[in-house]
Image (cartoon, rainbow over all chains, first blue to last red; front, top):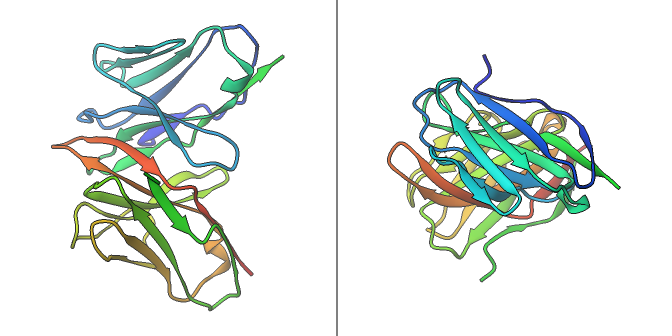
Length: 109
Length: 115
């Protein structure tokens, strides 16, 4: 099993729709989880942290499921500007930071 | 407050040439990181420095060396560039926690092509 795994997509979603994607991780001891957003030819930027109790920031909701070892990102009322690649992050086996390869999201007008 | 800065933004090298990528942060972070990003491979950690004076290998350290010059600066050196090192290189900084870490802040990247 890969340490951090994401569906590469692309997810093609009409504007205004709700979209969700998951990320699985293999290190059950990981205490840190994040979602980053990366626009084309730009650097990754933190979107939100993922807490055990879940985390909501406007249209974005992040959840952690420890039993099944995955984190999720839900985007409601999607905007054209949400088109980007979303990277999930967890700690790997030796406590090294591991980025997933990213999920590409295209919001269609 | 510039955050994380990297130089150069673009570079073309010939096989066998050497170069140093520079990174600086003004957020007073203890930890700094170098990543490379290739299509289909995601971000891979090359080296990191948990604090001033320390450096450790990441997932793909071969062919690279690093120097943590001071708390602000962390450089990445390619001694003898190879075409396989063609990539986008990102520097990042952040604060580690106990068995965890806080968010990282990335520089704008250096696009390196090795011919």
